[in-house]
Image (cartoon, rainbow, N blue to C red):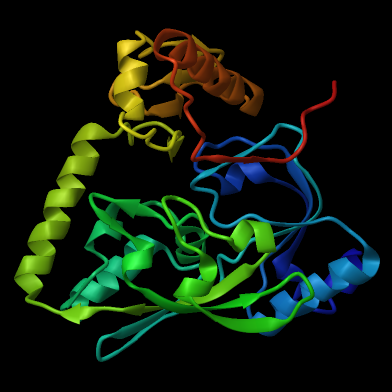
Length: 301
């Protein structure tokens, strides 16, 4: 398989038995059999076609910000699009490749005095990941500004889809169900005063940095907001702040976050998520639905 992969992309872009903890914000995760970092859309298509032909498992990693990889790692081919990072603007239209950070897209918009991506100035994910889960914060979300996207489907075909065709809703889209690999996103923005855009982004950055536990590795907000409640408030009122399983801890700074405080394993992190869900359910009768995605295999000892 290695020999076939390096016919598609240079050797530097194919890693064998690569630890995935180096690619996730939680600093958790076992090894990938093959980790590939394609540099072009054609390479992405060819890798999908190869996986189909060889009947080998294929996983898209993204930039690992809203993700937990289990301790046993991931079999087959794992693709990371970190080398697709180009961002272009033309008047009020921005085209950003999926591996670019959504924060960088918001900063590029600021530099061109374009409004619409201010909400994304503190979201630690990629553009592709932002579409995958219709990322949002502080009243804004991707669906507000997205017009179209280029994706590769499960068959390796390149498609251009409208935003409406992605069924974007609160922290969801049809991208995972349909197995799309996002290559780029086109955003429609509006001209505004640089000073006004910057003031809003500075305010949102302050709110984020003052409230979120950025000093420890984490997956960000663990749970979706349940209807009529706030997940963090429910967890706080369940006296769970500071609760620790192994090296994983419910943040003392923001109850909606679980941090990797002391070399946690993925199992400890996931066990703590389940403990929080069970406790909140018992105390308040509310089901906390995970926002973070969990992939990979358990470690067999």
